[in-house]
Amino acid sequence: MGFGKGYGKVILFNEHFVVHGVPAIASAIGLTTDAEVVRHSGKGIELIDNRKGTKGYSKEKMEHQKEALRRVMDYLGFDVEKNPIRITLGGNLPTFSGIGASAANLVAIVRALNDEFKLGLSDEEVNNAAYEGEKAFAGTPSGIDNTAATFGGLIWFKRGEKNIIERLQIKKPVEIVMGNTGVVANTKEVVAGVRERKEKYPEKYNKIFKEAEELVYEAREALLKYDLKRVGELMNENHKQLQAIEVDGKELNFLVELARDNGALGAKLTGGGVGGCMVALTPGKELQEKVASAMEKEGFQALRTVVG
Ligand code: PMV
Image (cartoon, rainbow, N blue to C red; front, side):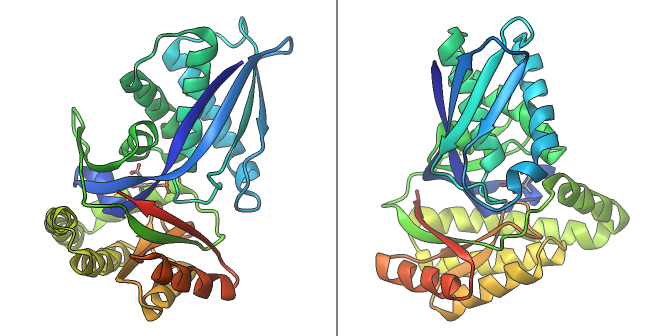
């Protein structure tokens, strides 16, 4: 039996903008998807998904998942007809949209395959294989999700011919709450929508993209200085920019407002948007609990975790 893990992640700044080469900041969270791979006597790949999370997620994403596995196996040159396998997914990372569940599951599977078949893959190669699979879920992924899922930690990421990936060290981890709208979003469609509108309204979009670029450099400084008040304000600003490119949603905006009303230093959507998750900056266990329970009182799932 082979075993592997992939981290979930939260994008703190610049999802969507990152697809078009604007830097972004993301952090792995302390929750993982775990995969087990065993050889079996059936045909091809058998997938057992024991992950918990948003209702309907696995079913909704099944076609993407199948395509992702095909892409990953092709990339690795791994012949599943010759080597039939059973993959079992589990772990404590819930399958919410916006939490990097797709990338975490691909990293976990590649690592488990690497373990069982002694493929000798480096982390870099695991990351590249997961990136190929991510194309099935996100169309033209930036690569930020699989990078966070593979390496963990807080990262600065800029997409390019060669991606720039830097580890950011902050004074100490900080509490966040991730609120789940419960709405499963089609990341591929949302990413394509941004691209279409960007082409259609270049002037408007270029201006917003430039502002998002300026903001993320400031956010990086604020994080490194551990100026959490400023980080929160910039998250609020970033949410406005994401609204301006139309990737927000009713439930997302509701949760963002609710978090701020309950004392979060900042809040924004995170990940693909439209549905999925939002993130609130809530330093200290007490504030984290207050914000998370306010969301739960309204009937939403809330995840308490840390970044950095
Ligand atoms: O919703 P998620 O967790 O798959 O995040 C998608 C992040 C995007 O920036 C929208 C796409 C990407 O590939 O970076």
